[in-house]
Length: 213
Image 1 (cartoon, rainbow, N blue to C red):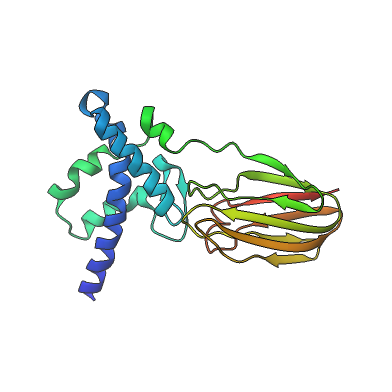
Image 2 (cartoon, rainbow, N blue to C red; image 1 turned 30 degrees about the vertical axis):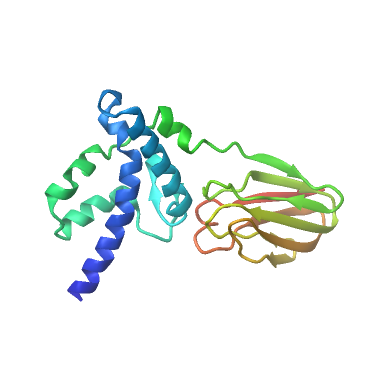
């Protein structure tokens, strides 16, 4: 049991360390971090969001995944489980609330979601390609009738498109790395919810409203 617990904790710390490295510069100050280091940190933040953020909460990176441990509070548990304080103390000291600036802020830009409009019975609702748990649109509109919703997922994190409401219940295939998830439904006047059905993604905010007029 102890060995299994240690393995789980080591796995968690590996993910935490990636996130901490990506966010370390903001705690050190510009005079202590070189331009090259900032570049590496910015890339680390991108990689964290693309590979880890779908499962973990980490406020500094803006990730809201709910299926994995909350990394904002993970350091305390790691130390409580007996990991050497000297190994992680530097990282812990630099993990503070706040907002990134400069290269780190630009590494994962804020997503300004738009509203999609169906044309000719076709609607496109794509996930954010950076790996954030959001669609590029927060809302969509359509006229009643047959509607095909296409979702191209360029991220490495799996997503799909699904729709429910007013008698509709359609779930597209889960895809990644450029795959296409597609559903065709008959919609009538009313409100529907489009969402990603991958566990934890909808709960983290990957959903929106389709209004049929």
